[in-house]
Image (cartoon, rainbow, N blue to C red; front, side, top):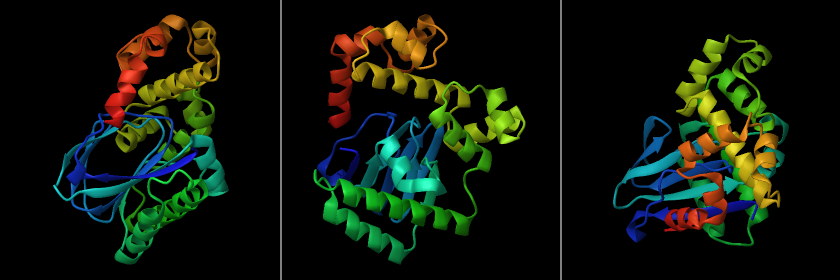
Length: 258
């Protein structure tokens, strides 16, 4: 599916380990309280809080009240860009609180389509609506994400090989300013974020049938296969060949699904 809406109910148990993925994701808390680890930051949320995780931003549910209930929404990156349109073609980090009427509207829509396999279009419409509400709430509270961070994520989403100096030049900002704001807003360094973009592109290429890992690594903007190998092991805990052929990927998926 290009869009999904699923629920997390603490009463049913189960936790997903810290993870990152290509799909941008929204979490909306409708009951209870929780503590998330988002990159290097700790974020505490309660009813009405909306969290947005862009592609590659790692996150984990660290603590939850017994009554925690939230909805998670996600879209494939290209589908998200198409749904959001020209206003903002990528999701960016966000933590805002919706007012009661906004929350009630989104909660009702999410409840109607949660866990359905035939709700792609409805999920896309909900994704667009929640992003619009989130941006409006952010404008009321003051932008939580610096403009250079937002633009940096947009630029790197289409060009993960963009180095800091070139990125800063396009943003018309000093490299130190770009790096500092990105680290604060996303919770990881810009270098690490760019590495994750490359890793996900490598995985996408192999999944699409490209069996030559050295070629796939080069086309994913790694300078060499050894660089790719080091990055893969650092982020995913195994070598690329193990991930694709030794059942490691399936073990990770089972841990995530559990």
